[in-house]
Amino acid sequence: MEGTEIAADDAAFRSDSLASALEAQDTVAVALALRNDGVIVPLLDVEGPVQVRVFRRGDADKYMLLLFSSAATYVTMVPEESDHRVLKYDAATLLEFLQQNVGVLEAVWFDVAGPHAMQAAPEDVIAALELPRAE
Image 1 (cartoon, rainbow, N blue to C red):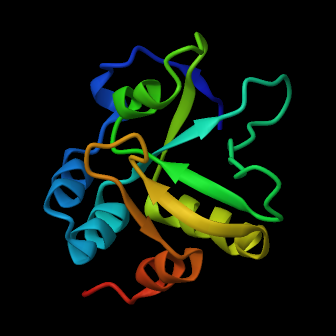
Image 2: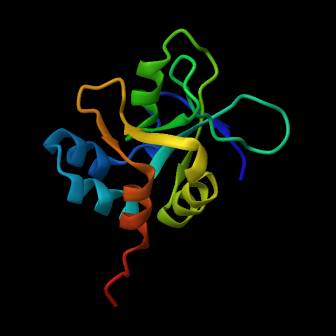
Image 3: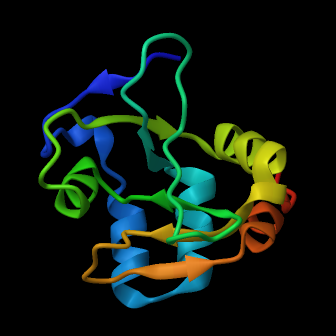
């Protein structure tokens, strides 16, 4: 997987279903959007393997994973930066990342810059992604 430099309005890096779920503040719809449409994940601008960008509050011991409904909402959060790299994670990729890092994450935030931010415990997002799919 390569990180891609994107334009803030790039349609390939947007989840309209997640944006709608966040606007409605509907946790079930957020879970369905993550399972079916994916989510925008910010990346560090580093050489070598792709690294997900996580954030820390002050001197907190754990990190927060910030996920976005679009590249534009990520850019809104860090407007002073010029190199915005993201990937769109599907449910399986997000689940794998969360399972590998649950011990160092205190929270998962969606569209933290607003206007419809939501927060979840990493364990709750994992549980939603692990639910069996209807056949």
